[in-house]
Length: 49
Image (cartoon, rainbow, N blue to C red):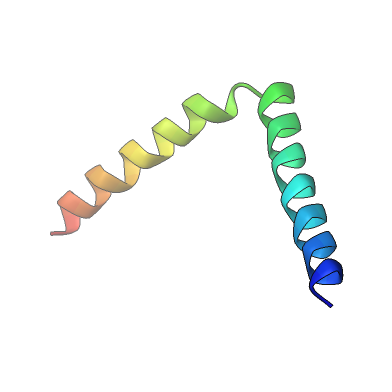
């Protein structure tokens, strides 16, 4: 039982980081875009507040 759960967990962990790493390598522009998006909501929130 525990071995089956361990296999599922290991597969899930390995699959998720692998996809994230590939996306970051293929699209390095995602990093600056995330910074832009984080900066925009702050100004918008402060404006509404």
